[in-house]
Image (cartoon, rainbow, N blue to C red; front, side):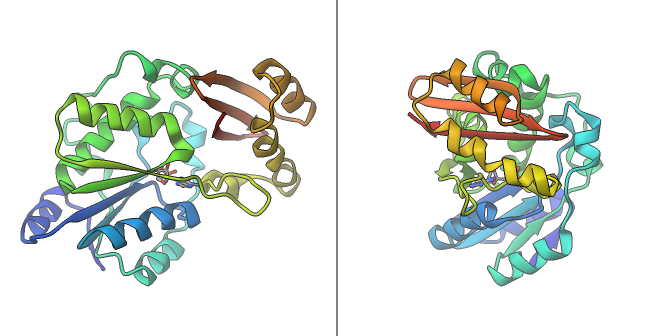
Length: 250
Ligand code: AMP
């Protein structure tokens, strides 16, 4: 596996190759959800590029950014075991060479759900993903349905800007007890970790959204939002200092 931190150097290197490039952008602290995206990319492409970058512009809460889990040596072990071809670890200054002066804004769906709860979040997400896609220029890029709103907004961005990349959605990987895998799960205390699967269990029941909120509150969660849009129920809750999100088809 070759590692690059400089966007121009990675771009130059990837231009040497003929063949399909698969791309998996991540913020590190890799778990089996991330690895399932990488495995799909390995199967469907000639080269796979993974990026690890904890993107400051998508965090509205400095504590969340400062405490974001980092398991870099384990990440490197997983990426090598999966025979990833390229790892891209940009620095903040190299990728935000404009100091975040240019931003990508979506004005409808990005203002709902996680966008309403986290001001500026999706501007940060869309801007970094646009930058990464322009650097890697992949044939296919892989995104998890765990972050379903993010997947929909990125798919919409690619269609809007007539970009030559296929956005591939991947199913949510869950722990045995149903909890959606997430890097932030590492931050749960033991007692919070024991309560957390209730979120996954309750969100998929037939309770209406208001009753679901009551049940979640009774189980110890603080509600950020619970909303059903078309045939999907989206939810975000807090357990102590940790924010968990999930969504299920209804
Ligand atoms: P993150 O590192 O959290 O930014 O996630 C990087 C990518 O992995 C995103 O496309 C996520 O949607 C995806 N991802 C995160 N958790 C899961 C999961 N449990 N199952 C499938 N994909 C996931």
